[in-house]
Image 1 (spheres, rainbow, N blue to C red):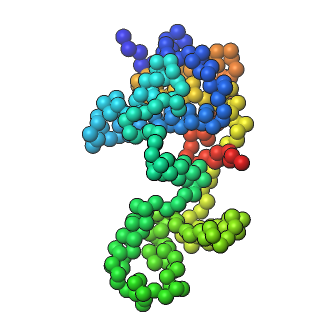
Image 2: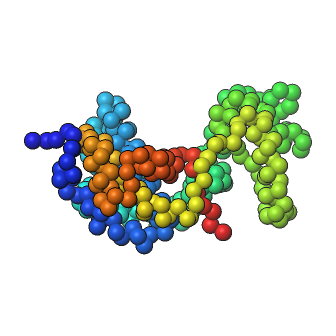
Image 3: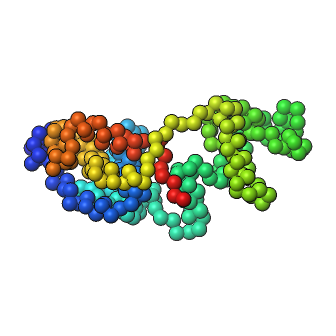
Length: 283
């Protein structure tokens, strides 16, 4: 008979074994964080299919056979190393041609630092916004877009489109003159321009929590991956583990109790899984 509430340690799922997680002891912070990101993806996928069953072509995550479903099953099979899986459904994949590699590098840099070159599709989008507002090749205010003089040619998009349109977009295109200026000069200009753009578009700096490479040891010590995996299992299976049993399962040698877990482990996991997290910079 299926149990919906686990009250005893001996009833913990058989796949949960600390020995399976010993391999992570040799992982770097970056590798451990990739493992955390994989679990965030599974959690988001579970939420997506739960919320969109009636609208989606696929009624469940298993029916979709997504990478996240394969990763979840890898955990349950005793192989919790997810970042080294090779997804083959096209949603997460390694790119082998130069164009795909270029795009992947762009997106990777953007996710870490919020900086990348503008995409062709975005340029077309902004051009469409201009045409939507002023018409193709029509007059913009009192000057013709086809015959702009040099000064008006550089009128900022935020002024033409309106601050409300640009702030919704929030990803602002800028121009770098790489041939005429040094990196130091460009970085100084960007710093100055950032302040002006945020003020003009009323977009404040996000409140972010910083994590450090030294947090690697905490990820292992706090059993972060084990905790996330048990949370995923409870969520998908609809099973609840008694709090005291969960703590003993995570820390069989009594390293932490319920109070300490709430005070240290939970806030740390929340920080690591938040969208507003600043990762260590590689110099």
